[in-house]
Length: 307
Image (cartoon, rainbow, N blue to C red):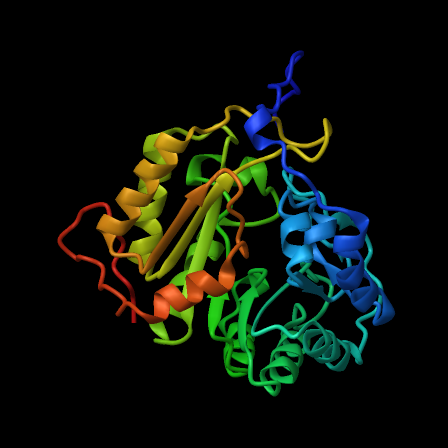
């Protein structure tokens, strides 16, 4: 991790977002706390929490709130996790029903200490929610790149499989020292090769990457078979986290979107407040209205989808 600069970049006024009132967030908080559930919205200090909670939506975080990995950008607590709650799938379904959701996003911490990395529990949670007749989007860890574990999760029938690259290849190992660029890309390629579900990935900008590297990463994503791409501004949770190198302007986000659209993504979503699950339902619906465009094997910058 680079040393913290003496004068960290000031957050522009345009990126100061209201978190919403206690009353607006109260209903979601109550439903989650009654069942001992967590949201990544709170753990990661997402700037969209007020907007999402006020509209009765949240990204559920299963398998506890302590991660076995420590990424330098992430505010989720790391350490020894608590035992897995076998009743969590049922509690999750109850919360989804109580909130009246139609599209549910589920994520989790890494559970590297578990033999199956949490895959069996993931599958149980997906099935419990799918029984409600809603669409399910999952934002998963890498499951150590083990295809049999990814298959366990896919067999549960998620509608969208999201696994984030988080940053460009040059910075990946510095930002995510316990993860692997190769494993991340292998997981995305493998899921895309199965033909279902829709595949999604995203990165943050402001970690020290260049615009050309962002465009190249979009090309890599599309070559792997990713359908939906998200790009958002990295906002430093605290002075202990990775420093912000820049704040990206709207014209640059427009350039990212234009490039993604030209590559054939069914949905390219880029902007300062864009996060993996922000407006996830709309992104999924947009994807369903467009036939996935095949990656062009003639382009030298695109990776061929392997069988």
